[in-house]
Length: 67
Image (cartoon, one colour):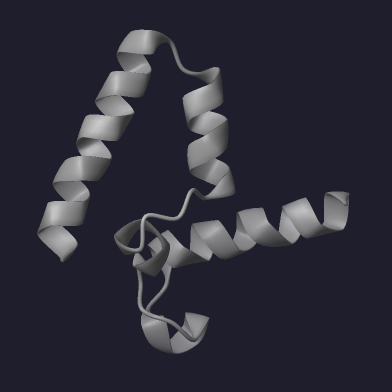
């Protein structure tokens, strides 16, 4: 289970930091498709209500920019 979680975290980070050729899929594709990444789930879980609102608003703006 821990190995699977670690793999998912690395995959999620690469989805933000590498080009699509290296990753084998377009950059930001998980966000564009509305998928909840491990990083997003952890951030929302750990955030205060105000921080959660800011994270979700930032995602909304990012999605509009990349679509």
